[in-house]
Image (tube, rainbow, N blue to C red; front, side, top):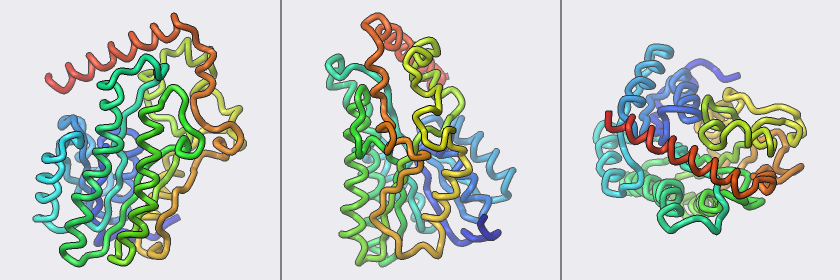
Length: 295
């Protein structure tokens, strides 16, 4: 639906760009001519994604292993990017989440999510924004949030709080930085299946018990989203020709949040033993991820 070369001359940073929706958006930008930089914690995954996208599109894709929980690492990496040529756009996509009864959460559990979604997104945005402002350049910010910013997110309170903060950041910066030529918008996706995502979040038997992630009955359009549908909206918001749109938080969920809240209220059906199973699955996944990063 977009002209070839639409994003030629654009240079876009995508955080969490190695997998999932971040990878899909990065490939869409690259296919339309943009230079893309992808950030994430797992260097090997980023390198493979950069090679895969570059081979498919012929575009320049640079992988940088950056942990956005570290403000100093963000600033250092952002300076390296601008030294090679300034960004025109930033996509705040990196996130973290797990489900749990809120009363069981420790301060460390809260910080594990907030340090990525709230602090990491803020610090990355400021690192790009201050460089645009100092150089008198225009800029474009897109943040990926959730529909929970309007309804709340039971059993995902740290993520819901953090994503709501990112949505308010979007609206605030649209006003504050608009006179400086910097736009800020956000997309609030509904269910866009990513390989392995639901299995990591919740064991299959419990997903079946609650219906979470397994049924489109709560979605008025009666289906899950396709990655291409989200990337189309992301391209529209990041491409030239959309310069008058700022401060918007756009739901893309087939109408789910209007009809059902689009959150994890269905997890109220789980009992204490179910939550124990989920906790064990999360701990096993985290241990496996640590082994992968240190291998």
